[in-house]
Length: 131
Image (cartoon, rainbow, N blue to C red; front, side, top):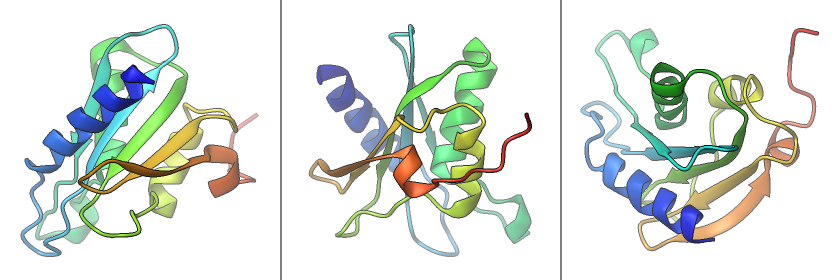
Protein backbone atom coordinates (compact mmCIF):
# COMPACT_ATOMS: atom_id res chain seq x y z
CA UNK A 1 0.00 0.00 0.00
CA UNK A 2 3.01 2.28 0.45
CA UNK A 3 3.53 2.29 -3.32
CA UNK A 4 -0.06 3.56 -3.78
CA UNK A 5 0.59 6.37 -1.29
CA UNK A 6 3.78 7.31 -3.15
CA UNK A 7 1.83 7.34 -6.42
CA UNK A 8 -0.83 9.55 -4.82
CA UNK A 9 1.79 12.04 -3.62
CA UNK A 10 3.47 12.07 -7.04
CA UNK A 11 0.14 12.62 -8.81
CA UNK A 12 -0.85 15.37 -6.39
CA UNK A 13 2.50 17.07 -7.06
CA UNK A 14 2.11 16.65 -10.85
CA UNK A 15 -1.34 18.28 -10.59
CA UNK A 16 0.36 21.51 -9.52
CA UNK A 17 2.11 21.64 -12.90
CA UNK A 18 -1.10 21.23 -14.91
CA UNK A 19 -1.64 23.80 -17.65
CA UNK A 20 -5.36 24.54 -17.36
CA UNK A 21 -5.92 28.19 -18.36
CA UNK A 22 -9.34 27.46 -19.89
CA UNK A 23 -11.08 25.05 -17.51
CA UNK A 24 -9.04 25.89 -14.39
CA UNK A 25 -9.50 22.19 -13.53
CA UNK A 26 -6.10 20.80 -12.59
CA UNK A 27 -5.65 17.03 -12.57
CA UNK A 28 -2.68 14.87 -11.66
CA UNK A 29 -2.29 11.25 -12.61
CA UNK A 30 0.05 8.38 -11.87
CA UNK A 31 0.37 4.82 -13.09
CA UNK A 32 2.10 1.83 -11.56
CA UNK A 33 3.18 -1.02 -13.82
CA UNK A 34 3.55 -4.68 -12.94
CA UNK A 35 7.18 -5.55 -12.22
CA UNK A 36 8.38 -1.92 -12.23
CA UNK A 37 8.97 0.08 -9.05
CA UNK A 38 8.80 3.46 -10.82
CA UNK A 39 5.84 5.84 -10.64
CA UNK A 40 4.91 7.40 -13.99
CA UNK A 41 3.14 10.73 -13.63
CA UNK A 42 1.26 13.17 -15.79
CA UNK A 43 -0.91 16.24 -15.60
CA UNK A 44 -3.55 17.71 -17.85
CA UNK A 45 -2.30 20.13 -20.50
CA UNK A 46 -4.88 22.30 -22.21
CA UNK A 47 -4.49 24.10 -25.51
CA UNK A 48 -6.40 26.82 -27.35
CA UNK A 49 -7.06 24.15 -29.96
CA UNK A 50 -9.20 22.01 -27.63
CA UNK A 51 -8.58 18.81 -29.59
CA UNK A 52 -4.88 19.12 -28.73
CA UNK A 53 -5.54 18.87 -24.98
CA UNK A 54 -4.42 15.82 -23.00
CA UNK A 55 -5.75 14.56 -19.69
CA UNK A 56 -3.51 13.64 -16.75
CA UNK A 57 -4.23 9.92 -17.05
CA UNK A 58 -3.23 9.79 -20.71
CA UNK A 59 -0.23 12.00 -19.99
CA UNK A 60 0.95 9.52 -17.33
CA UNK A 61 0.49 6.60 -19.72
CA UNK A 62 2.43 8.38 -22.48
CA UNK A 63 5.17 9.06 -19.93
CA UNK A 64 5.22 5.34 -19.05
CA UNK A 65 5.50 4.25 -22.67
CA UNK A 66 8.17 6.84 -23.52
CA UNK A 67 10.35 5.86 -20.54
CA UNK A 68 9.96 2.08 -20.30
CA UNK A 69 7.85 0.88 -23.20
CA UNK A 70 4.59 -1.01 -22.93
CA UNK A 71 3.63 -2.59 -19.62
CA UNK A 72 0.60 -3.90 -17.78
CA UNK A 73 -0.82 -1.15 -15.59
CA UNK A 74 -1.79 -2.39 -12.13
CA UNK A 75 -2.81 0.94 -10.58
CA UNK A 76 -3.96 4.34 -11.81
CA UNK A 77 -4.21 7.28 -9.40
CA UNK A 78 -6.26 10.35 -10.35
CA UNK A 79 -6.06 13.48 -8.16
CA UNK A 80 -8.48 16.41 -8.42
CA UNK A 81 -9.48 19.15 -6.00
CA UNK A 82 -13.17 18.25 -6.05
CA UNK A 83 -15.23 16.07 -3.76
CA UNK A 84 -16.17 13.45 -4.62
CA UNK A 85 -13.04 12.94 -6.76
CA UNK A 86 -13.47 12.69 -10.52
CA UNK A 87 -13.28 9.47 -12.49
CA UNK A 88 -11.32 9.24 -15.76
CA UNK A 89 -13.13 10.47 -18.85
CA UNK A 90 -14.24 8.07 -21.58
CA UNK A 91 -11.23 8.89 -23.77
CA UNK A 92 -8.85 8.10 -20.90
CA UNK A 93 -10.69 4.88 -20.13
CA UNK A 94 -10.23 3.77 -23.72
CA UNK A 95 -6.49 4.50 -23.57
CA UNK A 96 -6.22 2.72 -20.22
CA UNK A 97 -7.89 -0.30 -21.87
CA UNK A 98 -4.83 -0.72 -24.08
CA UNK A 99 -2.58 -1.35 -21.07
CA UNK A 100 -4.84 -2.58 -18.25
CA UNK A 101 -6.81 -5.60 -17.17
CA UNK A 102 -10.35 -5.58 -15.78
CA UNK A 103 -8.76 -5.90 -12.31
CA UNK A 104 -6.54 -2.82 -12.66
CA UNK A 105 -7.30 -0.58 -9.71
CA UNK A 106 -8.32 3.02 -10.31
CA UNK A 107 -7.74 5.14 -7.19
CA UNK A 108 -9.77 8.35 -7.06
CA UNK A 109 -8.34 11.05 -4.80
CA UNK A 110 -8.84 14.61 -3.68
CA UNK A 111 -5.99 16.70 -2.30
CA UNK A 112 -6.14 14.95 1.07
CA UNK A 113 -5.89 11.38 -0.16
CA UNK A 114 -7.54 8.46 -1.92
CA UNK A 115 -11.28 8.46 -1.30
CA UNK A 116 -12.45 5.58 -3.48
CA UNK A 117 -10.96 2.66 -5.38
CA UNK A 118 -12.72 0.90 -8.23
CA UNK A 119 -11.57 -1.57 -10.83
CA UNK A 120 -11.11 -0.69 -14.46
CA UNK A 121 -13.70 -3.36 -15.26
CA UNK A 122 -16.26 -1.55 -13.13
CA UNK A 123 -15.68 1.76 -14.93
CA UNK A 124 -15.55 0.28 -18.44
CA UNK A 125 -17.02 -3.23 -18.46
CA UNK A 126 -16.84 -3.66 -22.24
CA UNK A 127 -13.88 -1.75 -23.67
CA UNK A 128 -13.13 -1.70 -27.37
CA UNK A 129 -10.04 -3.85 -27.92
CA UNK A 130 -8.52 -5.32 -31.06
CA UNK A 131 -8.31 -9.08 -30.84
